[in-house]
Length: 218
Figure 1 (cartoon, rainbow, N blue to C red):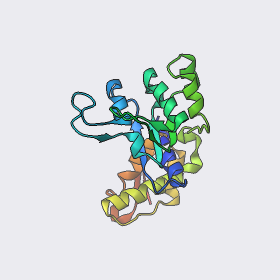
Figure 2: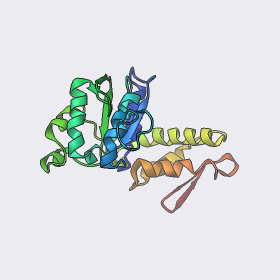
Figure 3: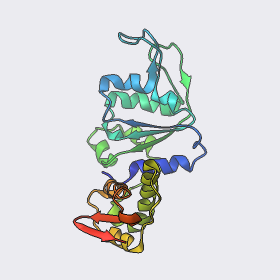
Figure 4: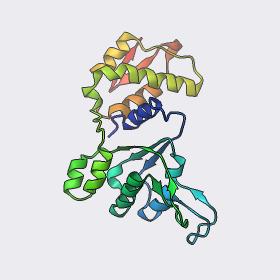
């Protein structure tokens, strides 16, 4: 958890020929089971009680783009079969429609669990596992990826400075050494939080980074 899976998905999308189309994210653990099909497929007005207008689902929104299924291991078994059909047929049926809608997707699924174990315990269908495991990517803990830290820190700093409309502050060599030496129990999420608070606290434009209980000044 917190190893930067969402960042990895964003990088895959931005490097692909689908980058001009949407990247649609779905947190599979946040959507109630009874709402999942409506959320993913969409529905026509009058398809069920409460369907007062036509609604576009996540699959249609991601057409010709990328669909990110986060925490895919939390998908209900009943919906897993429907997802397999979408992948194999390249089409889905909106609730209340009498026809299928073609869709072209790149699906990137992420999870903090070992999907092979999820298959053995029958929480994930084996056929869905094989459909999704075309190109597995392992996001290691940040402490095992020290070479990534300078690039991630600079990315988070630039993003925070832009959002807060503050002058861009450089990260010094001393800052980088301190960041690399830290164990990062919270992984990339912790690094992001550490870096993003610093532009507003930088004294005189000098970046101050608090790692654990130490203060590092440039």
